Image 1 (cartoon, rainbow, N blue to C red):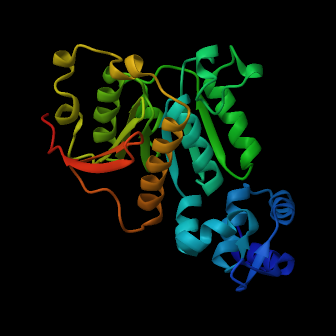
Image 2: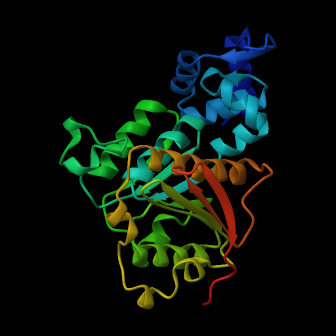
Length: 292
């Protein structure tokens, strides 16, 4: 890519606008950046990156750049994130990361939508019942942000395939609903030397941890997998109202964006964040490093 030539083209199409605070900035519209992507035969995210390098804000990211900055948005567009599960948590995670401009999204899910998903799963509608969750996730991402790359795998993620699927990812987000798969994902992320953002929900409560590859935590949180004796426990007993996955997915995405954009405030190692929406409280628990 001739970056200088693309940047010149971006500047030629840029217009001056003002943000809600009245501060002026250079902007490029979605239509204009899409036109340049076709002209130069480039992925949209590369044109958007060229714009940001020229200090021109793609208008779709104007409200995000105010929070994460030009450099943060550039890092997001250059990043790749894996998501395991496109159901309750996963649907909201995909939605948020697509709107933030996360350059490449890789999603795994072998399930299809059923009527019991309608209460909480963003991608589940009456018209998508029976459809593949992974395929609907890819369609949704393309409708939100066609500049991004998306890979959807309709399969069950396990230690035999996840290492290959996520080999080029910057981090992976756990949107699973069972313990065996979570332990396998933690093992794979350790082998790939990437962070795993764990999340689980039940009733009004959500919990989250940022698991570093050198410091496994799931054994400390859940105990040994064979001792836990459950694939799905409290989640099935308490259910999941619509707002709980939306809440926890936002926390997971916030951590992902901070890591990818190089921002401060990432949840410390060995900490489990618990959010209780019924009492309106949240707190961190020091769970320590898990055993090998």
